[in-house]
Length: 221
Image (cartoon, rainbow, N blue to C red; front, side, top):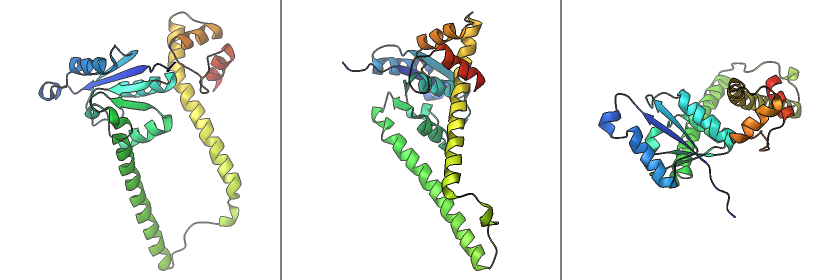
C-alpha cells in the first residue's frame, strides 16, 4: 500500500504587486488545492516581497516540512525565493518541494538553480586560487606554520563532530517552538509533550515517535 504524501502549503503575495500580478492568495490556494485534490495538512501565508530571503513564514513552513517529513507545495515558482542561501538550506534539510504549475520543477528546475549556484561558487574559488598563485609567484609567503596544524584525519573528525552538533542544535531549536506551544496549551510533563509532538506529525531526528526522554534531551541540547 503506497505511503500517503503529507503536504505543507506556502502562499506569498507582495502588498504592492498583488493586484497587478493576479497572483492573489485565493488563486494560489485554489491552484494548490486543485493539484493535490484536497486542502493541505497545514498552510503558511506571507505578505512580503520575494526579494527578502529572511521571510518568517517561509522559514516556519520549511522547518515544519522538515520536522514532519512532509512535502512543501507552492502554487508557482516565483512565489518562492531563488536565493542561493535558500537553496543551500533546502538541500541540507532534504526538503521535497513541488510547484502546482510545474510539478517537474522539484527535480529539474531546482536542480538547474543549484547547478548555477555551484558554478558561481566554483568561479569564486577559481579566482581565489589564481590570486594565490599570483601572490606566490611574486614571492609573497602564504599561510602560517603548518607544523602546528593537527593531522588531516583528526581535523576531519573534529569538523564532522562539530557539524553533527550544529545539526542537532539547529533541529532542537526548531522543535522547541512546538514544545512551547504544547506548554502554552497546558501540557507540562515530558510524556504529554511527547504525545503532543506525535499528534502534530513531528518526529525525532531519527524519524521515530517521541518519548519523555527524547523531549528532555531537546531541553538540554
